[in-house]
Length: 123
Image 1: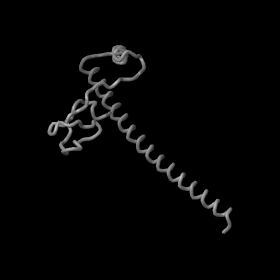
Image 2: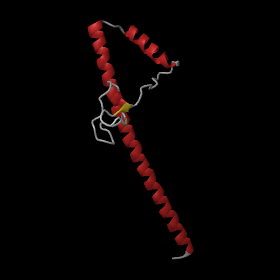
Image 3: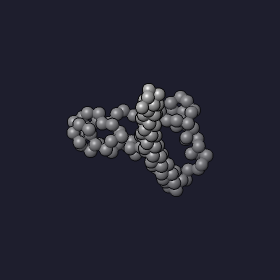
Image 4: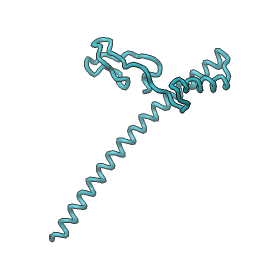
């Protein structure tokens, strides 16, 4: 094997490693997208159920809903279609350490996380 072949083999090896790393990143992105889709679907279900409840039990209209969406959007000072999260972190009821809202249990003492509000589990 001459020098040219060695250089080419090294380049091919590096290209294969780069392709493998790219594939791993794609897999990670796909998993994150699936997680976000699950969260989105959960929020959509909760919102739909709440809207049906409000319409059926209290007689609210689509126009009133649009007005409340606008008012809620403006609570952070911007009409941008987003809600800024302002809730404080959760504390473990057993060891009082901060518990991530993303996990069902405290990572320090394994105590089940407080259920919090309806929307706590979708962030």
